[in-house]
Image (cartoon, rainbow, N blue to C red):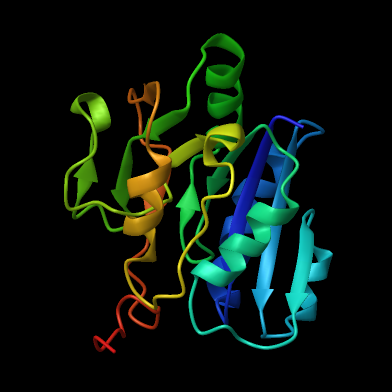
Amino acid sequence: MKLSIITPYYNAWDFIINLNDILSPQLNNEVEWIIIDDGCHESKLDDFNAIVIHLPKNSGCAGFPRNYGLDVAKGEYITFIDADDLVSIDFISRILNKIDNSEFDYCLLNWQKIDKSLEVDVTYGRPQWNCSVWGIVYKKENIKNIRFNSKKFAEDYDFNKLALKGKMEKINDKFLYFYNSNENGLSANWKGE
């Protein structure tokens, strides 16, 4: 298995059905999509071409389901897609091509907001303010036992501080990841607790 895609899921059905429409046709025997249902008991997810794990209760943060996904992932490489975001129609093929033709510990992807109000070109690396784990492909061997903490906000920052080391590659000739600023999402509703 070359690539594991991990998606934490919590009450985002209207979004993840769009992601499934784009991602599902791209899946093949070199890729697994792991959806961690964080206590929603969303049975419709079981119809997706994915490994769906239903956690018994909500953890209250994205880190716990992501850690669960890391623990079960079989891919040599790992990437994360949030349930309310989208990817390009060649997201998987472009990543597999990079895996097949280069050696890296992590690979950065160009991304933009769905409404096109922000575009990030990683030609010169990641902007310092961008701490997210989506838009990156990680070599699993490089992650080893690094896991997310239980913070409700910016848990990505601490993870990346440890995981983004070694040889970097980039896929920077087009946008592969599309971030949705979901007004109902955890980050948008964080109150600093």
